[in-house]
Length: 628
Image (cartoon, rainbow, N blue to C red; front, side, top):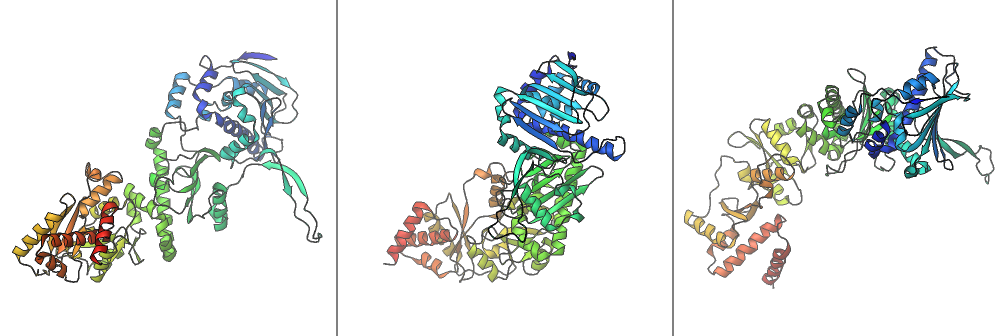
C-alpha cells in the first residue's frame, strides 16, 4: 500500500474547490459521468482500430445510491487505469496555480462549463463528498487499483481484486449534501445534464409492460418485466444527417426537448458544419408572442452531447435567442468570460453562420410555399423584424422574404409594395408615401378614409415597428412611412389640387379663436383644414415624427433624449367645409357654442379611444341630456 501527497501547485486545492465552485456544486455528477463517457469511448476507439483484444460489447455507465452507507457510486466499463495511471492522472493535477484559476473562474461564474477545462473534473466530487474512492481496473493485464482520499492532500493507493475492466467512483456524501442521496434529485440531474450522452446511463430499474400475443384471451392481463432504467437517448436527432430524418422525427425530438410544450414548432433548421469549425444542432421556430422577453433561454448548448448551459447569448445572435432547440459544438470556449466569448474569432464565425443559415432557410420556405409562409408570418415576424434591426447582413437577406401585410390581409415584400403604390401614393414632390396602421380597430376611421382614396394601408403592429421604419426609410430614397392617424389623409399624401375653403380668412380666424377658448392648449394644437364636406368635422391626429420618436424612446434606443417621458400632444384638425363647423361658427350664444365644441371634441376623442374615466362619464351624461 502506498501513501503520498497530491501534487498540486497550490497549498491545498480542496478549500478552493469548495469555496469557489460551491454555487455550481450539482455539476459534480455531470463531470464524473463525462469522465466515464470518455473512458468508454476511448475503449471503443482502441477496439475499433485493433489496439486491444478486449471486446467493446454494449457498455453502460451505472449510477447507484446506497442510502445506508451514504454513498453515491458512478461505475463505467471503459478502459480503466493502472496504479501508475492513477498516480499520473489523479495525483499530479496539472494545474497552473491558484491565482490564475481564481481569475478565470471569477470571470465565468455563470458558465458552469468550467471544471473539466482545468483538469479538475474529478476533483469536483469533493464539493459534495468528504471521502472519495476510486476502484479501477485497466484493460492492460495489470492488477486493479484502489485510491482513497478524505479531502486533504493525502491519499492512499493500493492494489485491489476488481476483476472486470472499468472504474467505480465511490462518493461518501457530506451531511450537508444529503440531497444527492435522493433518487429524484439524481434523476433530475441526469436528465438535465446527461439526457443525450452517447453511452447508455443506467439508474435503477423500471417495470415494462409486455404486449399481449394476438391470440390472448380477452381478460388476459399483460405481463410486466423488470428492465434497466436508461435515462438518456444516446443518438439524438441532431447527431444524425438531415437526409436520415423526416418531419416527424424533428417534431418528436422537439417534444423530447420540451415535454411541457403543447404547441408544435412552425418549422426547423438543421445545422451541420465541420469546417472552419465544428457545429451541429437543430433550431426550431416556435409560435411567437409580441413579448420579446419571455421567449429567451430556450436554446440548449451542448459540448459533445453534454449539456452546458441554456444561456447562449454571444454564440447565437441575440435576435435568434427567442428560438428553441440545441446547438452542439466542441469549438466554443466555455471556460472564459462572456466579453471574451463575444470577441472570440471562432464564436463570431459561428454566430454569423447561424444567421446565414436561418436566413437561407426562411428564403427557401418563402420561395417553396409562399402561401404557407404568409400564414405563419404573424407568428414569426417579431424575430425577423428584430433581426433586420440588429444585424445588417440579415437585413440585406431579409429583403427577399420579409413581408408587409395590408389591413386587408394581402402580403407583399417591400419591393412588391413600393411597385404597387408608385402610381397612386406618390405625392407632388415625387415621394412615395407608405401608409400604415398599428391598430386596426382603434384607427378604423382613418383606415377607411385612406381606402376611400384608393390607398393601400399596411398593418404594422410589432412593438419595435418605429425603429424598423427609421431603418427602412434611411435605406430608401424618396420613400417615407406615415401612420394613418398622423394627419388628415390629404396632408399625408399631398397632391397638386388645392381644396377651397367655404370660410373667409376672417371667419377662419374667429373659428380658431372660438375653439382655442374651449380646447385644452396643453394637449391639442388647433389647425384648420379645407376638406371634403362629407369628411369628419373634427379629426385628432398625432404628428408622425413626434409620435415615432416617443415610441422609440419607450421601447429602448433611438428617438430623442427624454421624449419617452413627454406628455401626449395631438393636433385637432377642424374641417372648415363641414356643416357642423359652420353651425359652431354661427352660434350666437357662447354657452351653446362651448357645448357643441366640447361634444364634437369628445366624439373625435372617442373615435381615437382617448376618452376615459371622468371625461367619458361626463360625455355620456351630456349626450343623454341632449336626446331627452
